[in-house]
Image (cartoon, rainbow, N blue to C red; front, side, top):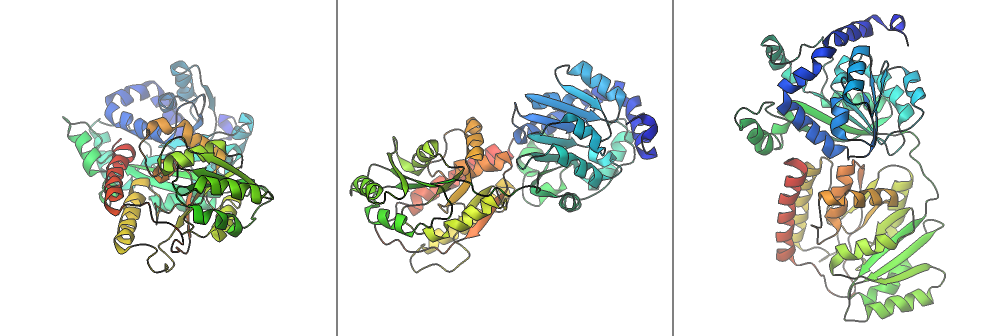
Length: 479
């Protein structure tokens, strides 16, 4: 689109940023603490070596900070694009109107991440931009929007008047709720939202202290300068006829093995069942092998985990799984196998990408969960909802479901968290949150176990959960 075709609003924006292009990098250097903190959090959201499109890329500094394998930048200002090409000749920078569908058609690809940082305030029609961006989005693409909290505008105006911030033309003002509504109208669904940077200057160490320990706290964080929203496209989410692997970790669960198969519905055409036995003393391994041989009409595999604990069993089972969808079913059968079709349907219909069971909605059978365990589960669910920026009602329900393709991405990024989780639940929960997967809870009716004894220690595992909270804060909030 030529300059003559641009609406008058866009012409003003283009002229302004053309004039500022030569000064933009100097303004970034003058406010380097703010920009480095902003880039640091965006690097947490966007893993390196992804394919990234930045809409409103300016001089390309953010795109360079993200270190993508494929980096493309679009900006309305030819002078900004010229500067970006000088700064980062290894990326593809193009002049274009963010609301012009032809710009995205010319890219002829889909991206892992589309990033809009600050420029959303300059768009003449935000919904038109979101609609055009759909052309480069797949169901797995994440749209990341970062922008200023509009309540900060009086302070920012003062900073501009004092020469502390780069001058800006008049901007759009909206809340996080407004943005989520605009996204919804354009067929994007907000996955999570975060607020960061309570104090945008270093100021002899005060800024880092406030941002780390105060600005991340509930309620207070809503006053932060920077808002971040992660969204996904809701077009073309359905994926029927996916194959599925049900992984059943089992240790001293001999009496439940046959029931697991007898009660498991055939909810799709291709179901693989993997028993992962954990060095039992009651003959569970032999029972798994007997059931595999007797129920030859099922595709059953029996593995013995090399290490100890549920986390090791799950990773062993998932590594051997051949299904498109991966499920965990605890061998104690306190979560009914009959409920698994609901989880499968939620994945294939695109309702969510990380599906967890919640035992805290329906009434439980007597003694299914001890009172202290119930209170602890309720408390930790709320803590982790805050830490993960998505609602979780029962983080320790053993039934969790996700696509194998997403699990493999969690594995690729596992070095960020390390080998920290003895339960196996949080490795998946934290990994899914970092990938920006849409989490959905499905209520289940929690039953008494009919065989064996619980392998959960209230106090030992409770202490481990407390340590998990500290770990999560450090890795997810205190960046």
